[in-house]
Amino acid sequence: MDLQQAVDQFDNAITHCDNLVAVHRGHGGANRGRRYLEVSIDRAVIVLAVAAWQAAVQDLTTALLDTARPTGPTPIDIARYDTLTGSARKAITDFATPNAENTRRLMVSAGFDPRPLWTYTIAGGQGRPRTTWTPHMVSVRLNEWLKIRHALAHGHETLPVNQALLAVRNLGVTSDPTLQLKDAEGCIAFLNRLVRLTSTGLATHLGITIVYPRG
Image 1 (spheres, helix red, strand yellow):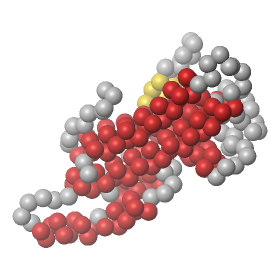
Image 2 (cartoon, helix red, strand yellow; image 1 turned 180 degrees about the horizontal axis):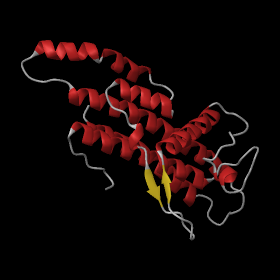
Image 3 (cartoon, rainbow, N blue to C red; image 1 turned 180 degrees about the vertical axis):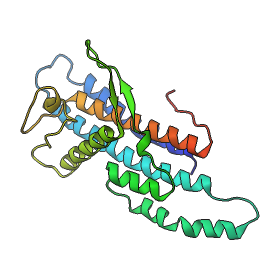
């Protein structure tokens, strides 16, 4: 697998999340009010988005190993490389919980640390100052989404109270937070950005160029 293929496959996977958001927005027509059915769509979006992130981490790590693999008429070097990277390839197969710590551990095992790349600045909106996200902040938010995904996938009656959810972050809800369409959209945007930051840094590390399908 090469890095471009890994990026393209994530884009294909996350597109299904965007499609579900579009279905949510288009459903209901004039029947507004509290729309219980659409909550199931929001839940599905988050579960699929986190699954797409997990697959992206596995694919990016595989691409790193495949791209760095020696080529040419030196079978001894190739065999030595395959032996040295065997544990990393097994870790890719065993990768199951794509939180910040496990993601970093997996990619470091292949010779690349993504965490320093996880920083960006976003506009505050409505007169608020711009916010710079640090690797620590990104790691915390990623782990929050993982906890929410876990609760959704396991059918928990209530969701974790954490800052990834608008009801907690903006309304100060301290128990049984609701899930909104904007939460699903926020999850997509966050993981999309995280894949871009990671893959861009990885491309620089490998000395190659990649093109993002949506520019």
